Amino acid sequence: MKAFLAKYLKVIDRYIIWKYLSTFIFTLAIFSVVMVVFDISEHLDNFLKSGTSLHDIAFKYYAGFIPFYLNYLSPLINFLAVILFTAKMANQTEVVPILTSKASFGRFLRPYFVAASFLFVISFIANVFIIPNTNRLKVDFENAHFGDQTDASKNEVHMQLDKHTYVYVKSFDNTSKSGFEFIMEKYNGDQLTEKLVAQTIQYDSVKRIWHIRTYSDRHVNGLKETMLWHGSTKDTVLDMKPEDFEIRDNAYSAMPMKVLDKNIDKARLRGTGELTDMLFERYHRFIYPFSTYVLTLMGVAMSSRKVRGGIGLPLGIGIILCFTYIIVERFALVFSTKGGAPPFVSALMPNLLFGALGYYLVLKAPK
Image (cartoon, rainbow, N blue to C red; front, side, top):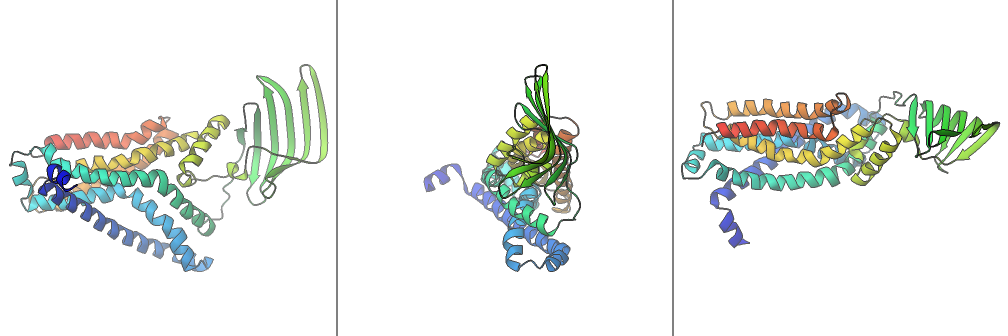
């Protein structure tokens, strides 16, 4: 191992990698403390009113809150770390000897990308396997203690349960788990074979069945039709749950990959309009970690030049660019859901745009 490091990682490489990772960890710690302090000041009244134990606050809410926002702000943290120590190196005339010793700018970038690769692997594992599970803790705690008590139910829901069955619910009450003006139609190809209309349906969470009350059942067989009226209750199993009728803006980020893929397949069949959001979330988990490389490239290109005034100017420009990246990354979902852009293209767009900007900055960087 020592021979490998001595051959491929010289003293200057190890120096830059150490400065990169140590500055990143220090910046990460500062952001963690600041986020927790501001969040406690904002939600202190909620904690006191709900009577939540300190254990639940620490190991349920903040165990999900801290990983989520550190991952969300990781491009900003990474970018600031690169600019801070690289601009300091340039200000202390440490970059000039490297570039004048017959080392190309690409060779100068090597230790940066070694450290960025290490952070990329951590970010990738966190995005795909860890963050969805910690988000579940955060989402469940927020829904239980930070809810605004407004009705989050969907109205006039059309849903496809399988290849032959379609349902419609005019309104749904989350409190009683009841739906009103329920219609279920079954088709054989393009031919209607059965239509069930009910005043109310209610979900039994214990038996995991639906109670259909006061309904009519119409059967169609070619030119023959039969209509039956029932004043009693019919119990049946349907491939839908009360959660399918709730508006859950933060639900997809809390789904493990297997659950998310399963819901994507179900959304393709049902055509509920949530497929784009779930596809974007899936692609985003795999693409977002690549921002480590993009922002590292931009940070080195911007801060490797020695300028008057020290690190203030590159740091200020870097903060503006990084917040711009976060804004574009957040609007990428809007481009997909409202603008009709493919989810994969929308998820990839921030890295493509700022990757091109980073390449341009590298071309203009001192060599």
